[in-house]
Image (cartoon, rainbow, N blue to C red; front, top):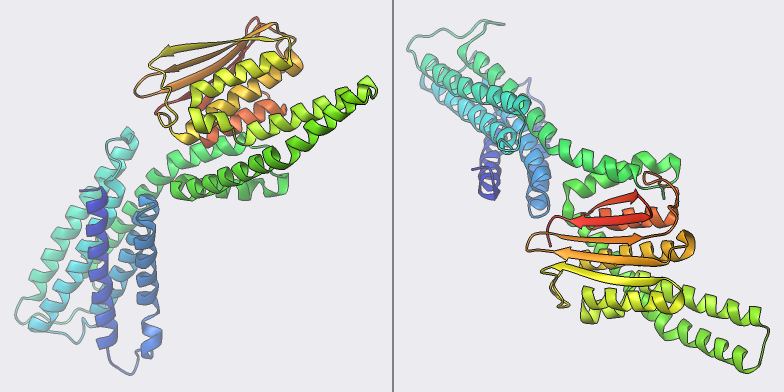
Length: 427
């Protein structure tokens, strides 16, 4: 039970351990005990971590598991330390009951840590599975040690332990705390491994941040990987701003540019002025469609690519073909909006590169899809420009950024022309 139900159970167990630690701390009395607010600091920290885990649960199970494990660890340490401090004064049934409560805290904390470590058992490597197995052995040893401590504490006539003596409870506590620490480390390594690799790849492909902020940028990307909802919210905000900008360009800027171009042509102004106005008009249209394609939103990806091919042919000598392969969806809502927008922008940027730099005569947009994946490629017969691994070109960098933001892989190859291909594992 390591899914959402397991996480809920872990939160409940951690809450019990923290409540037990709070009761112990409040109930302890004596001249050498700190004032009440001071003795509850650790318990309050554990409660805050548990609350943070509950808040993170809908967005990131990894963050929630880390928080609940840390909370349980603090609660366990607090509960066991109070019981150990009473070894010299508690006897008989009181000693047995206190030891049982300490054993419950140890078992609960170790169980949560073991569940955290083992939640990715199926996807783990041999080394990871070996580490999880060691944590499992530690959990069993903690349970056995706790039971032995309870049995030993219930023996009639048992003398209080001497200072520094390794009692069954102290041995169980050491095993349990080592298990909790080991489980937390294995769980963190498992949760951070793949996200850190993905964040590192995105970090390397992002040339937009200045050098003195690149480390902070990596931290931001890692946070996005650990909490996917965080990046999705930001992406939705970006898309909304793009839509607003495209609407403003369409409603305010384009009409003025078209009127200016028509006036220049009617007035017989020099040809270079007319050419500059037409180029400015084309650049604004290009910017508008990079931000938000009205055709894409209203009629879907296939229609938008057909429009893009026709528009490219109208504004350049390049001949563009559209090839559809497989069960390509033609409904506006058939493809996830973020995937459709990324595919359209990658095709638009690739064709713009071909028109501006490649000197090609023909280009082909290839769109293939099935029930589980989609691929788009732009192939031309022009002169290869740059290096496929180069990130200095703005067009290639923008295409890579679009692919990464939508969960696609992208490849650029040069063989008698240029081929830009992006693939999404799921629609």
